[in-house]
Length: 497
Image (cartoon, rainbow, N blue to C red; front, side, top):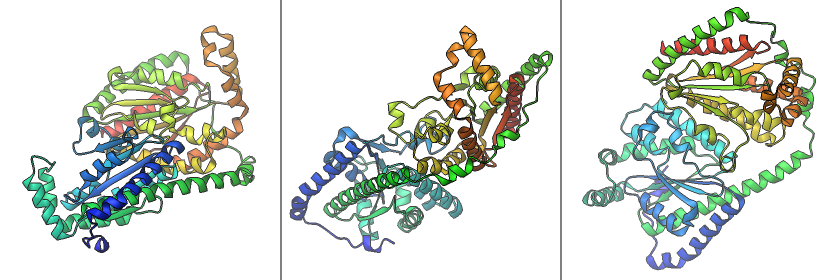
């Protein structure tokens, strides 16, 4: 794979001085287009030890508008990062619209180093590469420009660069692991070759750079970044044209679904809970959950619970009864409403990754990332190709959440249209409940069939073995609350086993 990048090509100082000003201006203009068009740019600078990764990052900071560039080095893993799924440390640093993030090695560096040192087997390494490739595809499809650079050296040039770094250890970052990996040139090249082969895609390709000569390397890197940005702009224009055409084409699939009966219609809503037994059972379950959740905290097992369902279905009441049975010091409730400007500037999953619980903690989402395939779909806030792609993105996201035995529970609280109408009118009649009813609630009610069809497809595509949906009959609030608590209690027991 690296034969063409190990030729030791060079560029004289005179030639560099002639070409650099023009390339620098092209790079600046490409960045300016990204700012104007609100395109986020992610540049991953990876390569062999001594290939000039740090020099490239310094060059980009000089040649680009540094106000819109953030550099991120992932050398040290913090306690905060250790306590969460591994992708969390990268998601929180992803660029906003119009901004550029430069990742030193990015999510590839650690994986390649561990493979080189034989700390992970081929199957585990391959699986991790597939996960990163899936993430990159989702980011690229959402409009992010992804540029991946591998700076390569042949064996002789690598040995020379390594010797220089060892002689200047007081001036450069050169850890014991760097020394160990650098000594195994063939092993690192093999790991890099495998990673590049598994993750090289049209929307997120690798550029392999001959890094022996700094001048040639620098010009080649800048050309690759300009090409990556131009590729993204062309894709964005093609997407806009495609969406314009699709807007004029009737949605045959949606028309066909209108005649289908929702699976929610088959849910038995007749279950009730006797009032005289409710308080006793509630207290018993809350006490049991408190003890189990504290054991889970000590074992580092986190819990992520999401609540979806119809307006006035009782999500808030169920959440209050649930949190009454957990320690407030390790529990957070995140109410999800319309995204802020900062959140709109990022990939839609970014704001949910920010609140992912650390090991042992509990996060409860009142509404969730499923808004992408519910309200954004029904209200036509998001193009069909975006919300249709979201099912796979969500499944991938939830797979990360359930790693290491962590708990993920998804509740849909279901009521009948008649019961919803009764609760709406009750809210209007009672002064201290009036704030709960809005014009938007009435508008959503008028679109009940559309929301039911969207929920049907959501259940079909995202109810997985590791993260199934729990549809809760909520016509009787007391019954629904106890059912939610029992499901969480049982999940805690399974996780602790």
